Amino acid sequence: MLHTLTIQEARKGLDNRTFSSVELTQACLGRITERNDEINAFITVTKELALEEAKYADGQIAKGKATQLTGIPFGVKDAICVKGIRSTGGATILDNYIPPHEATVITKIRQQGAVLLGKQNCDSFGHGASNENSMYGSVKNPKNTTKVPGGSSGGSAAAVADNQCIFSIAEDTGGSIRQPAGMCGVVGMRPSYGRNSRYGCMPLASSLDTIGPITKTVEDAAIIMEIIAGKDERDATTVADPVPDYTEACQKDISGLTIGIPKEYFTLGGVDPEITEAIARYVTQLEKKGCTIKEVSLPHTKYAVAVYYIVVPSEDSANLARLDGIRYGMQAKAETVYDTYSKSRSQGFPEEVKRRIMIGTYALSAGYFDAYYKKAQKVRTCIRQDFTNAFSSVDALITPTSPFAAFGLGQKTADPLRMYLADVMVSPASLAGVPAISIPAGNTSEGLPIGLQVIGPRLGESTVLQIGNSLFTQ
Ligand code: GLN
Image (cartoon, rainbow, N blue to C red):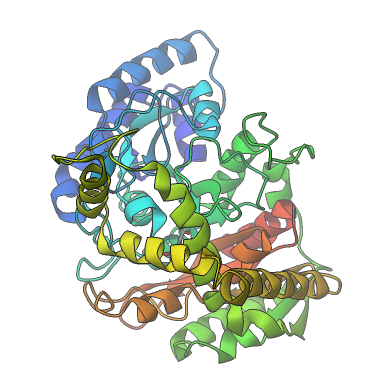
């Protein structure tokens, strides 16, 4: 049962020589082999490389050279590039793409000696909330295989929840780490925009994209955040602020903190009453732990999904222009240059990606730029201002991660607008660039995980982790 361990437990076992990294890696690979046909969490499994890396890690441990992640197996969302390893982004236009470069975050993790198990299934280039937009098949929720795992990092969340890896690294533009973590019953953290490098992440919306961890505990998320955060000369949007000791922050007492409950999150989007009740139970816990609870208002929350679905497709349509069948990946057979572009893009992207390219191209076109894109950016500023106002009187906000638990496979695919509403609780923090974590908060009567979201002020990762850990370990 080595594959069920957390990062902290695995570290202890490896350091005490209770088991080796090869044994731990074999346990995860065995679990992937046993489960991947059904759950479909991995697109590529790097078995030989993993065993080689594990063997090397065991050598380092024997020499007393182990660092925090030495010998610990992990998986990476396929929209994040790993040098020399096929990275499809969940779309066949990159079916044969082997990146010559690597995401800075992944390099930092691998320099610590972590063992790469493979690349995880996701909605194509992060477009989705259910993992049904992957061209490599849907991922199933390990807690109930008739349900979606959430998205777009469904494979990464499902793999952690199903103990196929010890942790995952994924991307969150508009909720893709938090929402699937919530639906699969694990921990998922989105950092502040600019806290972690985006270099090597296949871009969805460059002004919102972030990379973060999906883990089994909040302390594990803190360990990963501490390793991956920081300035990167390859990403000009990263900030130079020193990286705090997040692990220590997890241990801090939360008494004396003021926690805001944003009323709009409970009145918009038809929140399942079972979820409202679960969050209320956690709020009572916060009071018992000495926190002051305060109702706050973020009045522009109701526009977040509409703004998100103008800003994101706009940036997205520009970013995806580079995938044309010429520069990278798959090239469709065609007679003319125009047909090469057209056929490669029609065949290599799924419906949802094409829909967003069309919406974004339209919103950015000369005649509509002011009416759509510019207006959306103005409202985005109002949404950001709502958070700034709220954080002038509270330390953090508590909300559900999603208005509903995992839904049935196929239930929302026919209606993209209904699918977009799944982002109602996660997109506002993304638009504002503030950090947020989703932690498991019990189950519905149907036995499906409920996610609780803690949102903090910009660069307030320590507070988010502190409150998250206090609720997680209670
Ligand atoms: N549901 C969001 C979308 O489809 C998630 C995006 C993301 O965070 N990658 O755009």
